[in-house]
Image 1 (cartoon, helix red, strand yellow):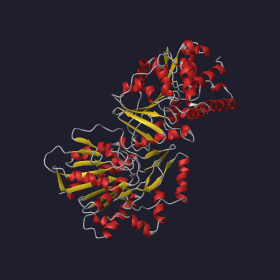
Image 2: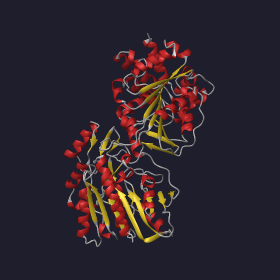
Image 3: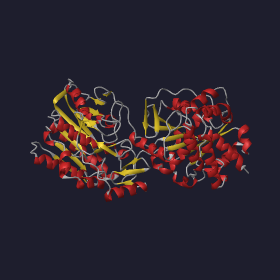
Image 4: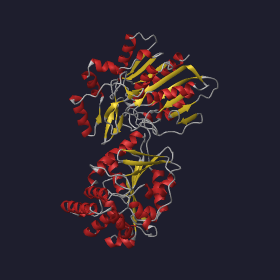
Length: 633
């Protein structure tokens, strides 16, 4: 029988001071990007088609995974996280697990990450189990290195005593100074957790950057956590890597590797698709003691885990991103950073060509440059995707975006010798459709518009935490008026109820309510001057759009143009059974998106069905190609 006191004490000791426990592993390559997503600091490595997300343990940074990052970066895109309060990052208030897991799902949404493999150590492994219970359908798998759904030993301790232990531990650690914390790491914490001691001071110096108060709060939440009742929900494949060192584990009656395996198996028995791999002659930081064994275990798991890429035909399974991964740029495409940020793809034939400016939606970044620009170039157009936020040097939220962002790209296009300056179109979807109508109203050089599920009036943009903030657009340094979000009301209450229940939120009603409650003067001021567009407008809408009423918005667009005697062959087409992102189903069922996750574990419903989006996309693209061919003669 395991000693309840010894197991609990050992687990507490390991997790309290898990940061400084081994020699420094081989250095990782320089990150290709670093950025923050809410409470998470993220380092990005590699550029492979599959994604790994590394989550370090208590008080650690990505440095503890550097050997594995260096090994896997050539074949994968890797995101290495730093949790708040650790490795020099500032602490946060509120629930730590709730906030950081919500920001994890936000990371997947913002970076269009589909079914990543989460690889966590210690506290990071525990977080991996938590994520697997929240949304297993959004993950490709989980690897947990000595991280469990409950702190080992706490399963033997009555709940009241667990709460007392957690409270005392939090109070004790929070009261230490930074110097005391680092000294304890250096002199006491390291030896039981690692077999090599030569680099103890260097590791302690890294761990010493962590905030003692934040460490105390993380420990309090972790000691009170018991995910075992939720494990049946974790249907994704899980690998638990368990280290074993007889000289240490025997002190807690775990005298053999099999005994430790049996005990760990009892803590994870509810997970339906889990395997355990034992790493002998290693301790808590097995990636330092036995780096090749840990790397090999992860590699074997990656080679065997089944990561489906397609939704079932006609099904309703939501996907967190418009495309399963970002393919590499073909040879005819070039990423640009000045005078605008985006991608240019040239046709294979010589001579001059018409040009098409491409604008993505509220996902931000330059997704269009990888997913659509090469296809547009294949049809004989110079395809120019323009990022207008969430890129280096650009705003990071969809507020106060200068229309001149598109203007700079337009002037760069006009300066090219391979472009016919009289034949320039613009194509945008959702918020990009909104911007496409505004840009075409601003720049007369744009002579054709494809507006996919757009709005002819300006709306507020979403601020740092996905909440409506200021208006989206500026011109000449001045904010353009927008229709404000309606406060309260039945629509807002329903959305709040759906959010609390982690159900897909149908926010279309909120847009409807906002238009209904705004005065005519406010709505009229928010309209773009569409009569200034020097060419035809093709407006595409989705009959089952649950984000906003794109069919009504296309009708509003056409009505405005006709009322102002727009002298071009404008057209609106509504596609039945289609959702907000139907047009991007051009890549097949794997690219159908029926909902997108938002912080807090909920999601936004986009409408449509897999079959409906596929059919609408197949019908719409021939119409778009014919429209462009006619308009750009």
